[in-house]
Structures are given as structure tokens and as C-alpha cells.
Image (cartoon, rainbow, N blue to C red; front, side):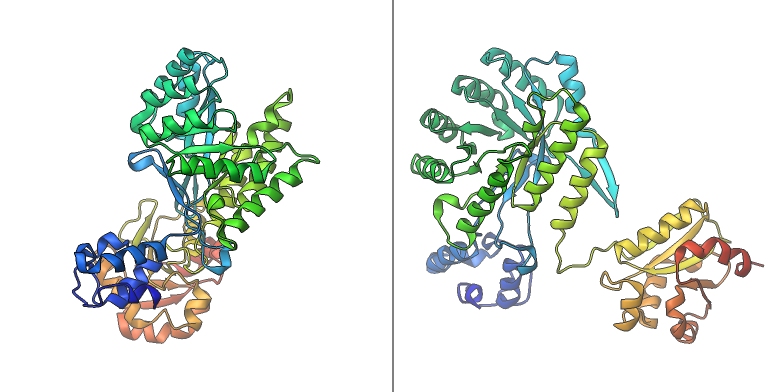
Length: 460
């Protein structure tokens, strides 16, 4: 209602929905912005627009790193705990290269970072960006490395150096990519702030182990005109100091959301790759890095800088991130349509399932593993699994008629047989009346489909 009160209230439909109340809901869900309401640009609504923007601004500022389609948003969170609403912007995972690497080796690693991808319930889980470290201490070498990176990939970039001259060289080269400058410290902040303001770039403020000092540095950067800040309170290796790392992250996020301390209302970052410092055991370093990163993802970090690109150390992080940043209010679903498994023909079996992602991909995987060419009709059950859909009356004759019509399945097969999940047996008669097809009640578990077909499937 507070959002609605700051809208024009004229139901002009220029925003694409019928009423201002409906538009208010879209604003709260972040499915729209105040810019999508043309009347708000009128002078008479200026005060409403200003109040609306302030009302909708999340406690943690949203910062954009990168440009174009590969840009990432960090921060922008509104709650301490996901069940209170949801988390919006998944933790961005950046992987390091440095300016002492030969050019070909650097390019190879950048391509490896860019090409990394794992499919999970229909989504491709990817890494997000490249952190370029000034390991040589030479601004010229750093600039060459940054140039090599931006010519190799469109991924967002973090420029890592405490040397302002090196950061300036890198920023000039990567200016079109809107890189994050890492880092401003109590010793160099004035010059780094000047560089950031001049190029409108985000800054990482770093004061390891000192929350109060970090808040003071944040205030100074803001007073100097820096708009986009990311807070780094330091990352300790696993051991006695790591508890303080996690505690500091929780303190900063609590100060931002619950106390609304302005200096704390920015995204948080960590550097799990500290586990590699001085380590000669690569397996142990990657294991420790993954453990640190997992802890920091769960304790509010919006951006991490890592080193290992091994699948075994990153897959747990990608799965964890997916689980945490999946909206708990919305079931994970796939598109309701006809899917083809293998190369089905006019005699292939037709299965019915729901558009709950886990259900569909389980069925599809079992069919693919058994090498059964088939059609899968995925009904729109609002992302609910089969048993829940039956209880909630989401699988109805009307729903099945709809998917039949949209999929044109009757043009693809010569038989008229539909295999439904075993738990849907009680609507067999209804579906036969509605479709005119023979309804075959299948097994309750899709892993039993191969044996079921041997006994029950035959097309004349």
C-alpha cells in the first residue's frame, strides 16, 4: 500500500498492466521499475517519484560490474534471511589471472573460465568473471595483461592492485567493461576515489579485520563522490582467524539491513584464494578454498575471488549458490510444451508429466538412460510435482486438452495412447473422456519405465 500511495493512481495502463495496484505488486517483485510508469515523469508527480525510488531502494545497494549481457549485479538484497522474502543477485564468482603469466597461458585460462559450464535442472551454471592481479608490480605489464583479458573475453573484470598507477593503466584499458577497482585502502583511498569518480567505476574498499575502519573508509569514499562501493573486511585462511572473517561479514550485513547504517549498506566480498598463499599442495589448497567460499556464500558475500577452476571444487559452490538464490516462493519449473527424447517417430510412446523441473528432468534422464525414443507432454501445473498437482487439482482434463492442442501431438503419432504417472490413476476415466485417447497408468517411479514398457507397450 505504501508503494501504491506513491503511484499516480490513474490506472492509465501505460505500464503494461491494468491497474496501479497491479503495477505496485510488480515493483515490489522487481519485475518493473518506476521508469516503467510514464506519468511519473510528469512534474506534478515528481515528489511521488522521489518518494517511490527511496521506498523501493534496497538496504544493500545494487552495484553493476561489467557491461553488456555478461554484466553482473551484486548486492541489492533486502533481507537477512532468504525465507523472509528472497535473495535477488547470486554471489558473483571471479577467478584470477596475473600479469606474470605468459600471454598464451593467460588466454588459455581466461577461455577456461569463460567456457566453464555445468547443466543443472535445465540451467547452465557458469563462472562470472576474471580478476586480473598485478603480481609483477609493473603498471605496464599489468596493462598488457588487462588488454589481453579484455581482448579474449566479454566477461566482467576486477582490477586487483594497491598501486594506483597500475589501477589507472588498467582502468583506461578496460573502461568500456566497467571494471571493479580492487582496492581502496586507508593509505591510497584518495587517489583511487579520484580515479573511480573520473571514470564512474565501482570501488572495493578493503580494511582487513577492522569493521570500524572499513565503515570509516566507506564514509570517506562516499563523501568523495564514489557511488558504487563493495566492502572487503578481509578473508582469513581456515583456522582461528576464519571465525572472525565470518563474524565480520554477519556484522556488516546486520548493520546494513537491520540498523540501516549508511556506511554498511553496500555489497560484501571475500577472497577465498588466500588458501593458495604459501601452499604447495594444490589439492588441499583447492579444498580449503572451496570450504572458505561456501562459508562466505552462506554469510552474505556478494562477490568472491577464487583461483581453482577444478570441477570438483566448483560444482559444490555452484550448487550451493543455485539453492540459496532460488526464489523460495516460486517452484522451479520448465516450459509447458512437448519435449522429444531421442528421435521419436509415429510409433513412439507418449508420456505425461508436470512442469516441476525436478520431475521433468528425472523423467527425461530415465528415458535417455534407457535409450527410449519418446514424447513427453509437460502440463502446466504451476511448477508443482505430480502428487502435489493431484492434491491441488492442477492436472485436469482442461489442462491436458490445452497441452494436446498446443503440442499438436495427434499429428506426430499414429496411435492414441497416453501414459500417465501412476499416482494419477484416479483421473484415468476423466482424461479418456476428454481426449478420446486410451489412458495407460504408468509406474509411480520413472526408473521403472523400461520394464513397464516391455509388458504394456505395443502399437499395432
